[in-house]
Image 1 (cartoon, rainbow, N blue to C red):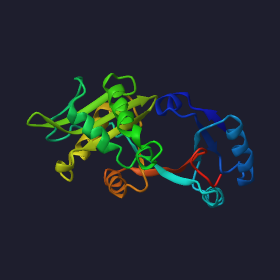
Image 2 (image 1 turned 135 degrees about the vertical axis):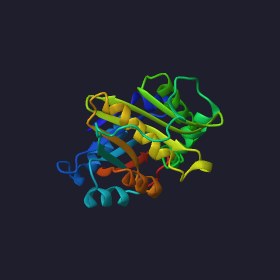
Image 3 (image 1 turned 135 degrees about the horizontal axis):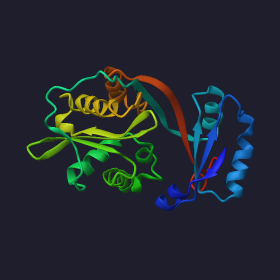
Length: 243
């Protein structure tokens, strides 16, 4: 249930843990023992992740003054092997170049509703975190596909993704704000589906925040459906006087 997050702790400079709550099994009465364990380990903070929305657990956490930083939504859709080619996608390519200012700006655009941006304790590292994400995608460490859409030499849209077994997961996706609403994101997703259809992928998944109404509406319009909603709370012992 409780595990130390070495990478997060090193990156954010705080001793951070992850607490996974299986709401069908774990009871809110266990909260005190969870807090005791975290304090015993001298944790600076923890991500409290509920397996699903649960009023009893959410009430317990909120009563303790712990803020919900994200309601993570996983959208999913079947990959259609008969998708066929996408019209007018000559401006979209699988990118193997270096990090550019355009890509960096798009990575920050992709994360503008992120819990790492909304939590003031982590905000200072939001941009470095998403820079690391796009860098590791370009190096193909955490992605096997980096699609970009270009217009007159400027990258105005981006999608990163990785396939594991039969599931292709979109990591980052964003369109330059000046070009949003022109179908670029839709074409990037269609192109990614075409690529993964040829690799045996059966499903595509993408995560966003429930508060990001524009993204949720966009994915639904692209044929995705909600697969799960996961509330994520952050607790900080050195700053939260209610604990």
